[in-house]
Image 1: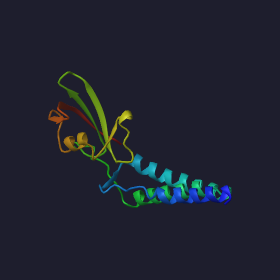
Image 2: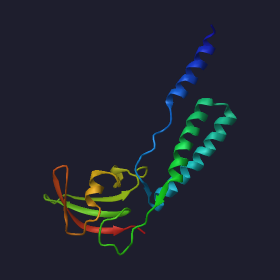
Image 3: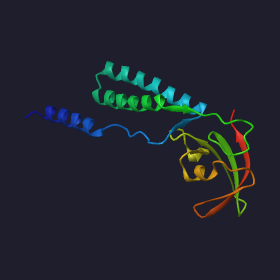
Image 4: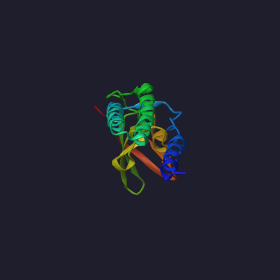
Length: 158
């Protein structure tokens, strides 16, 4: 048997075995930035599909189509949530400044799952830290992973 036929069969098997991207069972809360990121990814993937079709790159086409289905589903069930600027309790979309018992400070914006980037200061609304913060006010204490934190400021993003 020709080696070319074997490779094509292997590629088709690899694509089929890839499967769909799992969609989170949690509410898909998004900030305005998060919604814009989803929409930009959909546009990018549509363009990628056109390029892959033009180049006859079936694997790239299948991957882009799979990702487009994922982001389309995320866009379909996205719930834009903008915190009330006058809220005195932690809500989705807010940035929370914290200080621990050693004086270490941290600042986290609570965002959607797809938007979260802890290294850049944003955490998912389903993270243990966000869950501990929701509904709390400045001056209140929370404990996460054995560390106690005081909420020192709340900032509602515009």
